[in-house]
Length: 451
Image 1 (cartoon, one colour):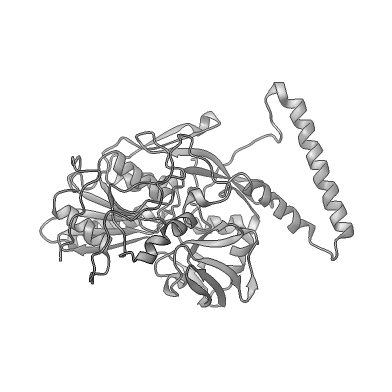
Image 2 (cartoon, rainbow, N blue to C red; image 1 turned 30 degrees about the horizontal axis):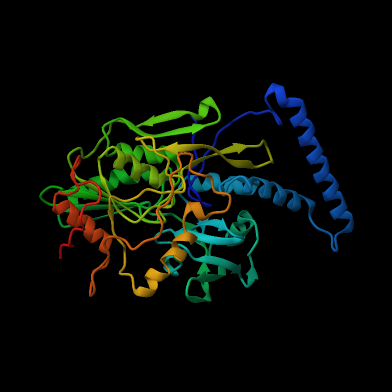
């Protein structure tokens, strides 16, 4: 069975695919010229390495230098392609199982910095107050700026119970240090509660445990909500993604067959359509999906599928915008693996969300914006999206992320609730505007929160 890795982060899941290939395989009409060019460049690389080894001011580890060069080559293609040394590859396989050691933080690289995609609920990073969009600049007082992402992540890992000090840079705040203790990360991938007559399910990541946990959560919600479910809220905010297969199975819980997502790449094997398994658990229950700028990859697949199929309405703010698929290609014993972008994915209607993100049907801000917040909106939005990452793939359909703007709805002055977006989702359901096939799907007026 072939699996796919869809998270724009270090840590949410694994794909394994045994793919054989011949190095420097080119079309026949250009094969000789291309081979000659490639070998000429490899000869140049070997010459540079040899001169550096002989003349650099201090001795250095040539293996580390070569790995850095490989990562630099892959990073020049797009922000999600990289080399995994044997230890990284093993760690990734462990993470897919849904249990691993670390801080519980999903990160990516941007402009030489380690940027937080999202802290995972109930982990050291989350408890310490690290937020989506934060930049990590040093570990235990030693700068990690400019360090390859894999190397920075290695430094964040360590023995369970060991301490680590991370320097955080946050917009409009002086840099500050956060002390953390490493622990075994057992993410609670699904959280549930009853909000009166509405069931709430938060999915934090897509790994091998997600579908089983979601099934258990759905049953719990069914029992906890007395008098029958009026609707469901599926919370995918700050969900960084994970396994494609998990996103398809999660979508299947709310669809009666039909397409969930399709992929297209250079090879015929990359052209695929993935359909929902017929296990729709609540066929007549209205659903609202919550998203934000930290909802990425597999989370966007679920939101896009339910939105396109008119099975749910989407509420929140525009998602991250990662519309590409990565395959992890094992390189053989002792060589690790290569994570490579191999295709783009498309929602059931055929749209690419690469760079543009999933736009909500009901645009709702989580907090009320002050005049200063509104002035800084463009800067903040430009720092946290797929399109802002260096070498990000272009959208092949020309779709672009909407310019930063003030959301259509935000908490009123004096709002004292805990979660305005959730309040609005529940209000939509109770107002009958989240029913499957509703004619009020897009650009509906904000619904007042129900006390």
